[in-house]
Image (cartoon, rainbow, N blue to C red; front, side, top):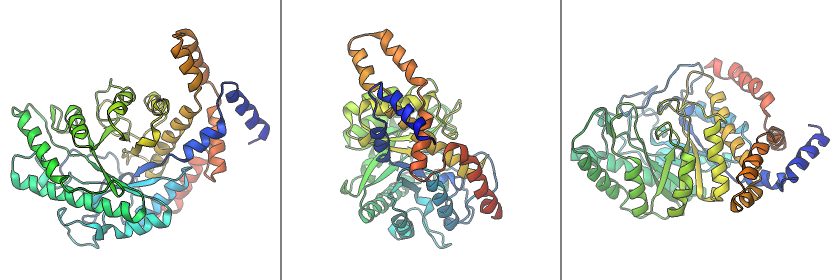
Length: 417
């Protein structure tokens, strides 16, 4: 883009006390944890084209080009990262291990099944995160895992959780960056349970057993993910927001807030300033619910803008692990991936280019008019020019070239699968 245009745009921001270069440098230091399951519709590799029932995980669509093997998945992930400025992480589920066509029970999955991923990540300059897979398994068919009334089923999932922590620790130790091990379970009821307390007591005790082994936070960090409702658990979710807030705070564990796991009128952005007061770290799952927990492709909408602004305003980005969590098979999966990840980066950049210092001054002065007027002025600042410049400087296609780039990959790679 014309240098004079860049200069003019930077001057507009400078008039409000905003250093564009500093904002870009700050964004470069923020990694997203990319969710591997967008490439294959949460199928995993326990068995060829596996898609066992259980757990309320549903992916809509069957667009051509789904990754069928780990090699194809890595090829797609490399394409995705080529479309994203900055350096990012990869979040895996335990069902994405390299099992060599063998049937490996979840209680038998170990670090040896992820050595290939670790080596691949090292070659890409990436770090890894992990999620235990507590769904799509016969032992999750009735909707309960760690809180199950059957002690045998509980022990099965406790052991799976222990194995997941062991794998995450090896990932973190080998790659030199602690892996975030997130635990989300589908436990809940479609209709009205009577013994709500009993399920939550069992979940508490199962988590305690799962997390009993002390592992250095240099290697891995545990997180637990809250939820309000889901498919098959519309009336009751054992691991509710209140349950996990209490559990995480009392057990020195990270709390995970997913944007799709709350009532549609709740603002996750508004929760951040409260959570930061009582937790040293936070895990976010950025998704886009539409009427329910549907995990649509993330876009740069008001909910995302509110979230990223609050992240920057609180000054706690360094303590916040930002992960993506959506899956859409109705469209080109790589394109969906790129749209969602780039939207989060755009939201962060726009927030970093906000005149926060001046806005805080008006806040302290209780000058409601000036504060609101400046917020309105900031809406029309030429943020898109800075975003495209950032992409250009990092060798990534700008928005005007994204469609052609993704469709070319579809034509030359995806359509040949």
